Image (cartoon, rainbow, N blue to C red):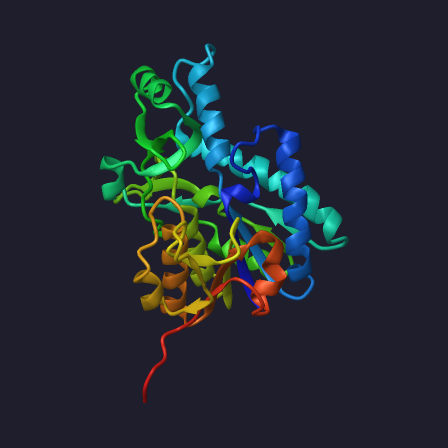
Length: 307
């Protein structure tokens, strides 16, 4: 079975942790252990978030006196793909001796007229107190919005249209390689209508919608979205909280899950199931093997058809 595994940013760097390389390597070692059990039985493609990492690089770039202007988000996204991809390759190399593993810096085509460029909503980087966030917004020209824990930078998040390296990923899968790609949603680029020339976009593509599109393009059988909770919960954080064990795309969308947390994950799962007839699931990293075998997580299944 071909499985696209989408790692949430919290799988790589937990909230409140220092973004040190050693901390991220320790977290990724845990990721590799969870995925190795699946990779011994199935064909695996991994994609991942990069919110904390790209936020850190953006702060460093903006404060670097050697630069006349900060690096744009597309190049910072490429840097995070290389860094996180390297950490994953090292850990998976040790967890899966003899397995071919490839990490690609991949590019995601987006529309230059995507409405999100006029309305940034994607959170990146660390959480700040309101006064600090507002000062940074004035100093660096950032857009700032309130997150669940404080105030953070928000950037455009255009809808992914297609991947430039899909054929290369297919070729690697044919050789039996485990492929790491489309990290952080991929490097966002726009194409000139006449020449097709590519230009980097000042944006971060949503990693969950990217994972759904990647799974569709690769004709995957299963989309597995891993996060820090064991299930999607109805009424999360209330006395009536309950786990959703399985749902159709229609039922999942009725849940009204918040845009800043579970919303993009449930929408990605719903889109993949609707468009392919395959299965998707959302659950905890440590339960990856159990989720695929139906013993944990929230399963998203196709709508029943009446003949």
